[in-house]
Amino acid sequence: MALIVDHNKPLSTCPLKVSAPLGAALAFMGMKGCLPMFHGSQGCTAFALVMMVRHFREAIPLQTTAMNEISTILGGMDQVEEGLLNIANRAKPEIIGLISTALTETRGEDMSGELKQIRARNKELNDIAVVDVSAPDFAGSLETGWGKAVAAIIRALAVPTGGLAKLHQVNLLPGCHMTPGDIEAVKDIIADFGLDVIVLPDLSDSLDGHVADAYVPTTLGGTPVSQVREMGRSKLTIAIGEHMRVSARTLQEKTGVPFVLLDRITGLEAVDRLMVSLSTVAEVPVPARQRRARSQLVDAMLDGHFYFGGRSIAIAAEPALLWSMGKLVTDMGATIAAAVTTQAVPLLGELAAERVIVGDFEDLEDQILEAGGCDLIIANSNGRQAASRLSTPLYRAGFPVFDRLGPAHEVNAGYRGTRDLITRLGNILMECPNHGPISAEHIHGHTAAAAG
Image 1 (tube, rainbow, N blue to C red):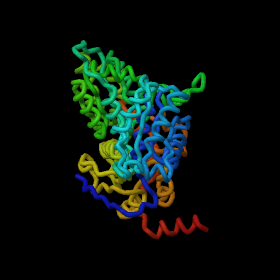
Image 2: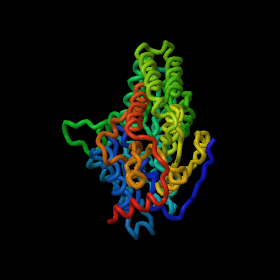
Image 3: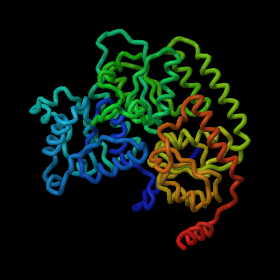
Image 4: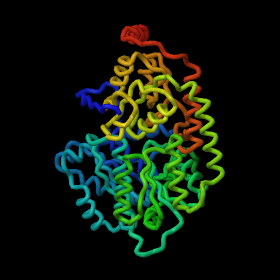
């Protein structure tokens, strides 16, 4: 059991947290023909846009109401209306995601109420789904915004079945810690059981790195609005990650579709639970292809445990990714030297670590020094400075990863994804001998040498 400690520092010099509005925008990127719009300043939007472009290396459609000093004081709903009409006339999207920021939430604007009035007096918005999401920067992080956006899409678009027969399909609500490659892998697994699937949101269809035949001003692929309206006819909803519980529950309340929440789908036991769920709803045995993949994973675990056993690993990530990676490495025989995350989630208390700190990369370094060093750091690209100072290899995972190619194509889900992840981590540990103790003097010396 781990003690969750929130340092609640007044200043973060090397932050780990990514804002909730960015998480909401990322979720809308998985909707077909979508154009998200931040209700806030230009700086809020530019920062999120740059981060997504650097991570995915794709064109990212994102708009802003560009609030200024006057609209911040007097209210910015006139700019919301103007922005919605401009988007409707120029981009002709299927759906617009209207996302609040700390600026508008602090002022206390009634975005939902104002949006109803805007739609009532502008008939050109009738054929466009406009979904508003309250996701201020000061509440939660990337996971929070993603989960709120998915729940808002469900509330706005999902419909009760009205007595229509259930289809041979399931709903998949992936967490924000899953890459487009992960989502595609899970879709393939579901197809192996002969089931159709509706994914919300589906980044594997929009941000998987394909090239369009012509310029499109909205998202390039994703889940159509029409499919969201059919989610009530599915037999089961599979939600992945604790932060997707609110979305799964919202869908169940709206449509009556039961859900199963999987805390992760990386690791032998975790993927077994996914297989049992799919086998039950499809009423077929687990396909031979997946049984073969399971056997390969077991063999990879046997091969890899020699290199994980007794090694210490530090992880800095959003709660769902920290949980997934932390459980895997401890299952393989490693210990968690340091664990840092963005928000206090009770589930993290079950990690096999001494502490889980809600903090930043500075906290990660301090915790690693206190532990006497570690053999590997798992974090996003912003962990590279700490890894360099500590002379420790870094495995890049999470968001953002901007100094490597192909982060969207990494697959950690399912038997094959877990097998490949064990191989990648194990190869790093094979190359590096056990790390000796690290002292504060080592850090200061490395910093001085870099400065010189």
